[in-house]
Every structure is written in structure tokens, then in C-alpha cells.
Length: 191
Ligand code: ITT
Image (cartoon, rainbow, N blue to C red; front, side, top):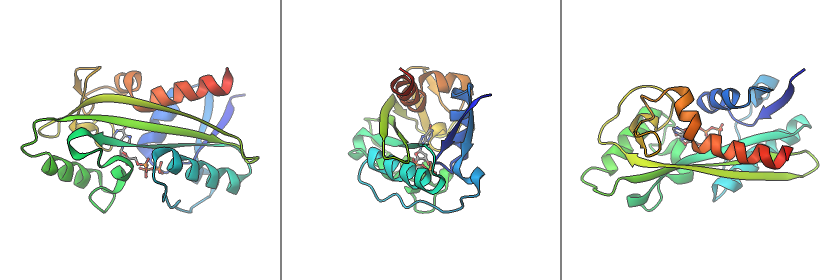
């Protein structure tokens, strides 16, 4: 029987990728367990927010939970949107976030950006294991493709030399901030 992992995320794009990466596990989102609360992410760092999410779900379920806090960090914008990526344009809509980011990058020559992911695995007895991952690229001039989620269709990956909106799931997972963080986390958890 496969081992179970509960992910403290309601983001379908993240859950799909994590399921793809953890083929040896049965992966559940916390809402699969009937939990319908939204978790207030009021931390100041990716780590703090991941810890808040993992802890809330682990304590509610009485079993370990994995959380992913992630975002896009844009050099020329002083690191924004960063931890505010999900609600950059205010309404949590990916297309609106992309439009605002492209607008704020109009005429900006330095288009370097990176995706960052911090994962936290929290056990109800208070044990914390964490790992992070990054992937680098540039903000494109216009959206391209519709694969992935969030900012993928305006992010040109340095590793793949193509936009994540046109990369396959497998290509994205081979270089993503999320897969790098998860790989490092699983190594810490399983040795
Ligand atoms: P949960 O907290 O429920 O997991 P969320 O979407 O609120 O879902 P975050 O607070 O971690 O998650 O915000 C992450 C945002 O960063 C996400 O909504 C996207 O806008 C962006 N993002 C993160 N990883 C991404 C990826 O792989 N591709 C594109 N955008 C990504």
C-alpha cells in the first residue's frame, strides 16, 4: 500500500505537480479531508508562510502535513511580488496577476526573475523539516502558451530555454523550484 501525504494547499496547479513528483505516495490536498478553512498567510517569508500552513493542517488532522509556499521574485522590482505572488493584483486571478506584472515591467530592460519554493513538513508533535528550491529565468514581453498555472505563461526558463507556458509538465517538473525543493525535502525525510 502506498504511503499517504497530506498537502496543506488548495492550489490545484501545485497539487497536480506534487502528485506527479511523488508517484510512490498517495497525495491528498487538505480539502480532501473535509477541511474547508482558508489559512491566513501572515508570515514575512516563504518559510514562515509554509510553516503556518503545514502547522494549521497537521494540528487540525492530527497527522503530518506538507506545505508549499512559493512565488516569483523579480530582480528589477526589488523582489516583488515574492510572498505576495498569489494576490499581486488583489483578486487571486492568475490572468490579472500576469497583466499587472507585465505592466510593471513595461520598458524595463533587466527582466531577470526566479521562482522560489519553500516546503515545510510538520508533524503534530512539533517536528519541522524544511527545504527550498529555485529556478531562474526572465519575464517575457507577452504571455505565451497555457500550460502550467500562475505566472508560467510569462516566464522564460533559463534551464529549458523556453517559456513554461509551452513546456510540458514533465519538462517543467525537471527544473522547477517545486521539484527541487521537494527532492531536497524527501532526501532529508527519507535519508
Ligand atoms: P496554497 O497557499 O493553498 O498552497 P496559493 O496559490 O495561495 O495556494 P502561495 O501562497 O504559495 O499559494 O502562492 C503561490 C503563488 O505563486 C501562486 O498562486 C502563483 O501565482 C505563484 N507560483 C508559485 N509557483 C508557481 C509555478 O510553479 N508556476 C507559476 N506560478 C507559480
